[in-house]
Image (tube, rainbow, N blue to C red; front, side, top):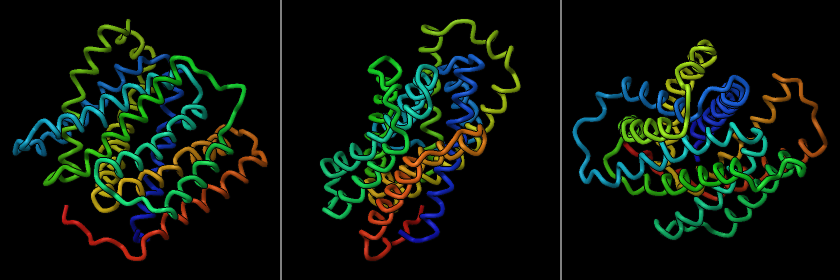
Length: 291
């Protein structure tokens, strides 16, 4: 992976970490309905990116399926999970998507994972778990199940995205948003109550998160993430997202004044070693795709 693309991945993970902290506050503390928040987010994204919907992709079905998995499926489930479990535990559970993406990409795309990459993934995953492990918080409840399903949805969507030809990142983002609005709105109508009243009571928090998540997270960071998925093996890109939960913990330390532990530094070192092993698996950078 080229250094500029690795730095891009670092920036992507940092944006995701900031969004995780903000989302946890708005959903769990302010009480904003998560599905309604997700639907509103994708509505704003669709309005911004609507020119990229044309021409109609052919075939349409794979694009819709990928958009639903990476949009409504992933974010609807993830934000619902944020309202039920801690951000740290959610970050642990999301990492199941890393080996899952590697396995799916090997089965569906015939990507060669290789022993070195497997070792790198294992080391980085071990380091992440060491940092975030909280035995007292482990729960097999609804929140944990929702986050695991969110990780599964993103892993499958990431692999399907690799098979889509002729879809630029912004165009894929536009279709992801458009296909996600209606399903999320219907689920919110059926399962959530007093959405407008709750949003009105915390208008500033809701509006700030909506703008940040729609414009910075979705339009900028996820578009950049889609670009990297087009350039590199899905297993490589997904492995580097292990930086995201580490940054989430670091933000908790810096912003919320949480105390560091020996496990944090040991786990961080392991995760960095794992990322380095993953990066050096490829001896040369792949050609840059014109997307």
